[in-house]
Every structure is written in structure tokens, then in C-alpha cells.
Amino acid sequence: MDLEYGPEYQDFTKEVQNFCKKYKGLSFTDRSNNPLGSSGGSGGPKMSRSEWQKILIEKGYFARSVPKEYGGYGGEADILKSRIIAAEFSKAKTPVAMGGQGIDMLVPTLLEMGTEEQKQAFIKSTLHGEMIWCQGYSEPNAGSDLASLQTKGELVGDEWVINGQKIWTSTAQYSQMCFCLVRTEPNAPKHAGISYLLIPMDTPGIEVRPLVDMTLKAGFNEVFFTDVKIPASNIVGKRGEGWAVANATLGHERGSLAPPDATMNRVNMLMHLMKEETLDEKPLIEHPIYRDRLMQIQGKVLAQQSHALRLLSAKLNPGADVKLGKMIQKLTGTELRHELEGLAIDVMGEIGTLYEDSPHLKNEGTWQFIYMYFLGLIIGGGTSQIQKNIIAERGLGLPKEPKIEGA
Image (cartoon, rainbow, N blue to C red):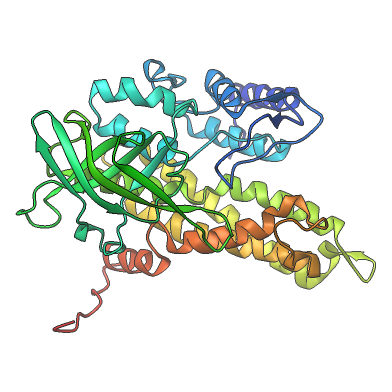
């Protein structure tokens, strides 16, 4: 059996390797709002993240199958090329493209369900990192039971008038836009009365209040809407049918919260850390207990990468349903990242307990920060318990959890 890629892909691999060499040591002149974004190296070229994003798109290393008229590369989806790009970027420690709620969740939703006007207005600026989005889903009394949301939208003339509150709204304080679930049909069954609206965050009547989380950063926000008016055309899909649009977005969210190639990048960083840190004058990577934990994590990441390729393959087949596959990726991916970052903290010993402004921090404290961040993501985007229930019931055909009468 010949497992070689063949000449076309061998040439493409060399192309990507040369690109990574050209930008070795790249560093950014601006700070990312995404705590998981790669910060780049030092001693190499300098540019803004938006400039880097455009270079990656022009080369076809990001947004490869998004049409050119919407700001993408305009090529065909190619599983092997996608795999080669991820592998070579990881090996070379080349910064990957920006992600985020707009890029990872809204763009594919608009490509699938948006109007032509919405695609033209929002996709390019979002892909290029010029427009940041937040997600207005959860409310104080509508978290896991999202369909119980009460934020109201009334159509008055040619405008939606919105009143209500959202919570756990990541990046709202930085965002220009919000994709938001609003109850527009108060007399309809709860799943049938919701619409999916696009709201400019500088609209009068919007108040954002930061919420400090366990990372000691304001990773979340409360958002209050008081007589907020937006154009009637700022709706994705039909009125009252926003639940279907929301589920499409949730599917993209679950597939983007813990991408396995980014995890492998962290594994490579962890291996470097384990070669630096010593115990009894031996690098930690030479101690069997630590090496065994590392190998277990490596095995899980390799399995996740194979699973991601399966999801990518399924996307190329019309009618393939990858919703459960993305739930599996979210469930295992977030828990795996928490385990990986935790091993790094153990490897650093007492230094691993430091946080914030200590002069002895390693890697700018990213291990400690991301350890806490992924503990939050195990809960966010649908808790691990919720994911397990759905996978068990819809994927394995197990009976539903019994409900207690009157509860």
C-alpha cells in the first residue's frame, strides 16, 4: 500500500515549509483579545494580527473554501492540504489565523443561511479581523435550557425594538457586533418563537458590564438592552425560526472550542518545557511518571486529530451529519486541554502556582491562565454533562434521563 501523498502534495508541503521559514520568529504589534491566540515569536518580522490574517487568506492557508467575493481564498476544500498546513505550522511554531465567535461561528452560519446582502456586509470584515462579534445567547434564567430565553424583540415599522438581558457574553466589551437570540413571537411554543438578530454594539440603549472570572480577567459580560432599535433586515433566517439558525451556530461553536491542531502546538511547547525543567538534575521528560503522562496526552491528541479529519471528510459529503461528532470534539477537547495545561503546571513545580505579575512567571503565565480558562470552557458552550447526555441519547440510543414529576 502506497501511503505517500504524491507529487502535488509533496510540492505543497515544501511551499508551506518555505512560508513558515520566511515568517520564523513573527511577532505582533497588537495584542489579541483571544487568550488562546498564538502570540508569535521574537526576532523576526513584525505586523498586526489583521495583516497576518490577510496574508494567510491570500496564500490559501486560512478561509480556503470561502468564496473570494466574501473575502476568502476561493479554493476547493482539500483535506490533505488542510492537514499539511496544520502540521507544518505546528512544527514551525508559526502563528495560526485568528479565530473567535465571528470567524468560527457566525461566518459559516451566514454562508449557509444568510442573505446575499448579509454575506457582503459582514463576512469579509469578520474574516480579516476588522469586525469582532459576541454571542448573545445565555440569560440569567436561560442557560442550559436556552429556549427559555425572555429577551424580547418587537417589530415596529421597519425596526426591531429589543429589551432584555444577556449574560456570560464573551468579548462583548470589545465587539462591534452581536449575533443574538430574541423572543419575537411571545405566544408561540418556546422553541418556535425565537429569532436570530444581528445587533451593532454601538446602538443606543446597550449597556455592557464586565464580569471578572476565575482567570481574574473580565472574560465575560452582562449585556442590557433598553429600547434598542435595529433594522428589520438584520435577521438571519425567517422570523420565529431562529432556533434552527442557533443550532447551526452551536454546531460550529462546539467544533471550534478546542481545535486539535492548536492542542498539538501546546503539546510541542509542553515537551520543550519538560526538557528545560529538572528534577534530581534530570530533565522532567526523562522521569517515567511525567513522561507517561505526556504520552497519554499525546495519544489523545493524535486521536482527536484523526477525529477532526473524519469531521472534515464528512463535510465534503452532502447530507453528512457531523453534529454529534462536533459534540464529541468539544467534550474531549476541552477536558484534554485542561489536563495538558495542568501537566505543565505540575512540571513547573512551585513556579507553576504563580500568577499575574510575578517576575518568575514562565511563558508569561499562559499555562496557568489557560488552565483556568479551559476549566470554564468545560462548562461553557454546553457543559460536559450536557454533551454526554446528548451523545448518549442521540448517538448511542440510550434511554433519556428520567424526569421527576412536579420537578
